[in-house]
Length: 185
Image (tube, rainbow, N blue to C red):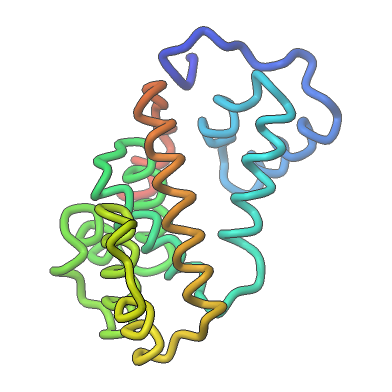
């Protein structure tokens, strides 16, 4: 099945490095996420996407992996991105709890989260809704909850990344892997 509404087949054969990455995904996740398959029609684009994703979501940060996934879900809820709500909702359910994942998908304001996490999501959502309105008071609110300036940069970078990927996923009708739904059960 094509992972998007576009007719863009994967490069064939995949370069050895890409094949190894896809095999690692299959081993660790039980699937190759469709977002990777969607980008695999152009290896340079795939590599750029995965480099940014890996830096933002997996590299050392003052934000936990769960907090970064929480940002992905809150931003995706604003943008109503089906792919990212399913995929990152599954990650929050796995890293946090099913209740947290469901609350973030529907309305992060009802989630049982810390005031620090609420401030983080308030900032990410404000960025998603009207980034030009962000001002020093918004950044200071994060500092008041213990976030460093490096953390604020990471919050903004993760939110910005998902605003971009949400738009891309919606525009090309990227479809979530069925395995994400199975993880909710």
